[in-house]
Length: 210
Ligand code: 3PG
Image (tube, rainbow, N blue to C red):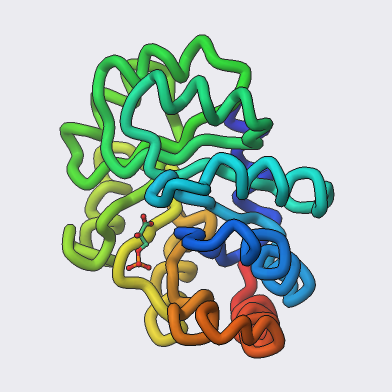
């Protein structure tokens, strides 16, 4: 489990978080990000076409690791398994999700924002977490503080992260990668400007190293 998540999270410093509005955008958008050097994607279940988008991206870009994000319930977790998700990401956690994830073949990156939530996940055996919403929940300072009581936990912070503060997070020992929506600005997606998105991905891929 830990090894599986580490191999995904250490593949790229930055995980683009996507909410795909138009199904036709799914493959060209994902391809631009992967070609730019970001081969781990989180596709959120925030839009109607998300599941179909994941299926199409998995089929077109077998080299990409595709996570299903914004999973709120075990039923959605099951849907993520069915469309071939490589991992599942949740914004927060419930006991039901923690329990479901333990038995699933698809590993989960549970979202936590406090030490208490982290402790519950720890009890279930989880060691890798999403820290969300990172900037609003104390940011770099909070992650440094988490390393006191639970130094073995590793995080992918998201929420309010961009090109200007990603490095501050990646410099922390307990941060594996960061995630965010800044690589897919709505204006560029609406304009189908895949070249510009490829450039944003390349900028992030080249700038950040572990
Ligand atoms: C997420 O679910 O990870 C966030 O929506 C990403 O946050 P951001 O839009 O602030 O990057």
